[in-house]
Image 1 (cartoon, rainbow, N blue to C red):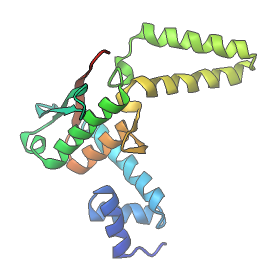
Image 2 (tube, rainbow, N blue to C red; image 1 turned 60 degrees about the horizontal axis):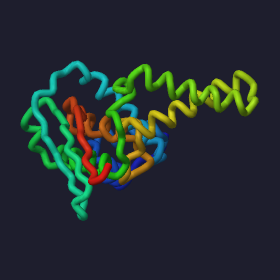
Image 3 (cartoon, rainbow, N blue to C red; image 1 turned 90 degrees about the horizontal axis):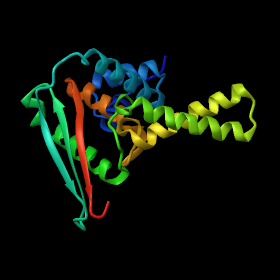
Image 4 (cartoon, helix red, strand yellow; image 1 turned 180 degrees about the vertical axis):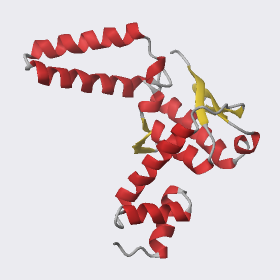
Length: 198
C-alpha cells in the first residue's frame, strides 16, 4: 500500500478542485501515481454525471465572448439545476471557457446525437471510398473507417473536442469534472457563433 502524505492529497486537490477525501481515496487506489489518480477521479466524475442525467435543469446562464477585434462573437447557454449553482463563480467561469472554446475551435454541433444520420452516412461513405482506394484488408479498413469517423466527430462536435485551454481534456470530460465537483447536473444546451464575413 502506497504511503500517501497530506501534501500529496493537497497537491491533487489543487490540480483537480475535488474534495480532500476523494483525492485521498483516488491516490490510494492509484498507488500514489498522480496521473492514475486523476484518471480515477475522471471516471468517478463520469459516474456521478450519469446518476444526475435524469434531473431537470431549470437555471443557468447565457454567457458571451467577443474577440478583441470585435469580428467574432459567441453566445452559449449553460444550464444547471438551481440558481445557487448558476450564480456560482466557478459555474460562470466554466460557461465563459465554453464560449471561448467555441470561438476558437468553431464546432457545428454540441454532441454526436445532434448530427443528422444523413450527414454521418455521407461522411462514412466517403471514408469507406478512401480506404477502399488504398487497398487495405477489410478488417483493417473497418478500423480505419471507425478512426476517421471518431476524428470527424471530434472536428464538428463540441463535447468531443479537446479543450482549447487543456488539450489533454475533452469538453465532455471537463463537463463531467464540473458536475462531480459542483454536485448538480450541468448541460451545454445551445450556442451561436458569429463571425464577420463567415
